[in-house]
Length: 138
Image 1 (cartoon, rainbow, N blue to C red):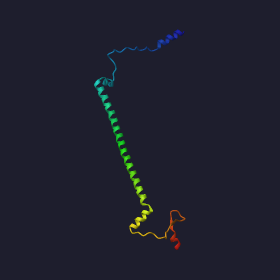
Image 2: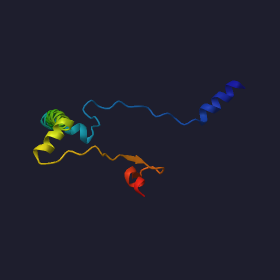
Image 3: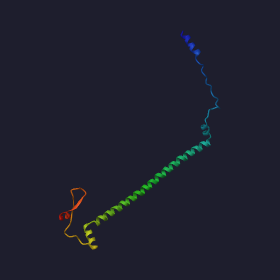
Image 4: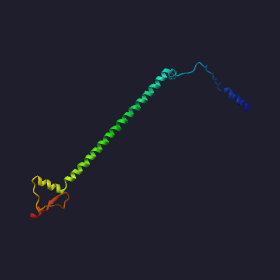
């Protein structure tokens, strides 16, 4: 009975296709493979790819070099401006000395103030100043 079933299964199965070997001369070649088969075309494609990559590299290198040069110029300019700023601050501090201010005033015909000096005092409200002398005269 088992043997009979096996035979029935074999009877109803579809026959298998046999693979046939292709002849050596007939290979399936795509268009790209045909193009690469020609050595001159292959060399030109590789040369174009190398030129493209070289162009990108040179462009990026030029940009980096230009940026570095500009940065160096700006740093030297910043150093010069900071040095000038230090000199101007030193000059300003020297000119703000009370002795220099009094000397400058006398040289330009100004009279020194008397002993009656007026001071400002902050009022009860912030950011408002009042003259004490004017307040006492009322």
